[in-house]
Amino acid sequence: MSMLRFHASGAMHPEYGITQDQLDSLSGRLVEACAGFDEGFFRLPEQQLEAYAQKRERSELGRIFHVANGLHEHLDAVVVLGSGGSTLGNWAITQACCDPYHNELSRALRGSKPRMYFGGNDFDNDAADSLLKRLQVPSDGVTQTEGRYALIVNSPHGDRQEWDAAFQHFLAGLETHLGDEAEVWLPRLVIPVTGTSVGEHASAGLGADRVAESSHQLREMATHLGCKAKFTIPESIDGRFSALSPVGLLPAAFLGLDCMKLLEGAAAMNEHFRTTPYPSNIVMQFVAVHSLLSQYRGKSTRVLNVWSQALQAIGQWYAELHSACLEECSPVGNAAIEVRVCRTRHLAKKTSDSGQPSMRSLDSPVAGHPYVHTNLVVESWRTDTLIAGSCGSDPSGLNDRADETFPSLMAGAIQETRDALHANGHPSVNLVLPRIDTFVLGQLMQMWMIATAVERRLLATS
Image (cartoon, rainbow, N blue to C red; front, top):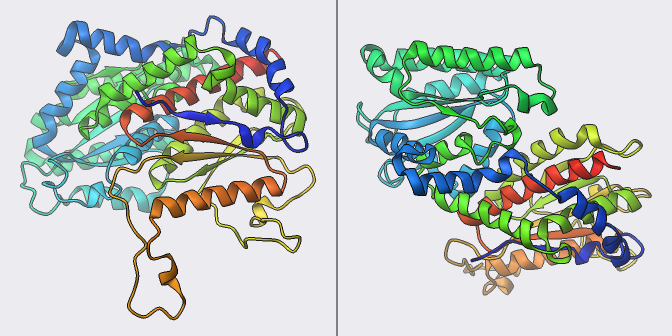
């Protein structure tokens, strides 16, 4: 069983990082903050797996599989509508686990799985118009029967005007697209995922009356349309932590992704968090290092260096989760805690005038510079290893690297970037994914959700 790993050596430094004594000193407070950890999202992976093992098709996971498998041959695309974090989690799973050009592949090369799109998060007129027009045109070779599209409508914790407008717009477009078939197919192709209660949303700052009204509106619309399938966000789960609920699992099932492995990965991280002592506990160490860097070095701005394009969306999901949940808890006097997703870091030049590695202006050595960098690194790639290769004429000397592989060049770039960061006084840590698949992705998402909730607890006791 492959587990992700956390390496904090790049943050352990007496001049710009933290010390082992400081890390050890936080043990008591952090273990206390983790005691009795029972957030609603935490129990969900095991609950869903156990329910499926006992009830199969009668469990919620079984119902998700039934709906997704039953519609594959009848549609060409799925649109996920939702606001904020409720769509970012879906997008993260899709981008990480699917071919990056999934929507451009033919229906045959997609294995009859639908194209997947996301909307409802803003008032972008051109984007909404273009998406609706694209949905009206099925992929090449798709029959009229296969050319329908479905709407997954997420409303876990109260809606916004952006979401309301998008839902009305795309629902009207789908009804028009179906024509005479609308009465038969709308109930199957509109799939609502709603919240059930307002109690769990207090921490999100949402008014109880607004949440009740919005959830009621979606349920009322679903009843009016006669929707065949309806899914519910568990009462104990804040919408920002809903990625491994039906909010994220339903789109994943439509894409044929291994939802069981996704939940098993999350359950494996739960077990690690519950049973592993502080010095080796990935979640506790992750929280401790970042908290101490903020406390002792003023490093309250976190830069997430994403070293795989497939993981960019999950970085943005984490940024939303983290900032939304912790901004109000940030210590007075410190900059707001945020996460910035970056593409592969490029060195402006290998050495500075002093002979030390140097970074672009973002990472230049400035007094009080607040950045701590997390490198999100993939250890093993899914596809065959590419070699740089050679060309016939080589006036620039490119053939000098003809035998080097893309993974080796990537490893060199990561190490060079870390060296430059440390030379300029910036601590860094590494989160290493053994590979990108649903099992490892489940671990990463659960790890970040637990860490965010634990850090919120820790800040509350400061």
